[in-house]
Length: 234
Image (cartoon, rainbow, N blue to C red; front, top):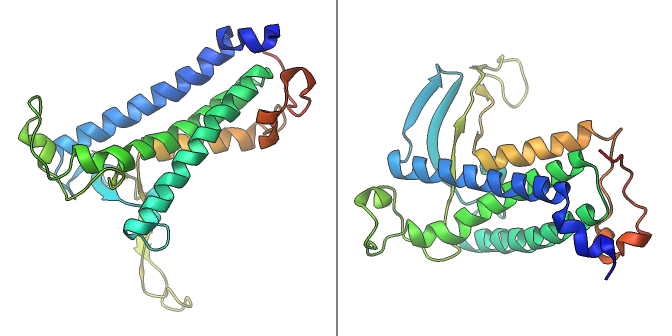
C-alpha cells in the first residue's frame, strides 16, 4: 500500500473535513431535538423582532420544505433512500478528495453539503420511531411526545425552525398572475442542515478561482494518477 493511501486519514485535512462534517450534524440535531421537545407545533418565538423567528414546523420533503412527487409516504421513502445512497457515495467522494490532497476550501464545502444531507436523513429515518406514538422508554419524559405523530422507521418528518420574513407586502394589482396577492421574502422555513447545504454550495461557487469540484470518477482513480483536482496546497 502506498504512503498516500496509508496516511491520508492522519492528515490535518482529514480532521478538518470530518470535524466539520460531524460537528455540523451534531449542532443540527441538538437544535432540532431542543425545538421538537420544547416547542408546540406551529409555535413561534421572535429572535430579532419580525425579521427572524424560531418557528417550529415539520415537513416530509427536501430543503426549505419542498416536496418530491407532492409528498406522501411513497415520495418520502424515495427521497429518503435517495439521500442515503447519495450520502454514502458522498463519504466515499470526500475521502477520495482528501487522498488527492484537495484544497481545504473544497473539503469544507463538500463536508457542509454532506452534513446537511445527513442531518435531514437522521430526521427521516429515526424521528418517526423515536418521536412517534409509542410507549415511552425509561429515560424519556412526556415532553418527547408533545408533538408525536403516528410513524415508523423511515417515516419521520424533517424538523424546520428558522424563519426570516425580511419583507412582506402586496404585489401591485396591475401585475399579471400575482397582482394583489400577499408576498413574503424570504418565506421558506428552514433548519441548520439546509443552511449547511447552502453555505457549502456558496463556497464552491465563490472559490472557483482557487479550486474546482472534481468529477465523481475520482473515487475510482488511484491518487498517484489523479490529475482532476485543480487546487493549491495550504
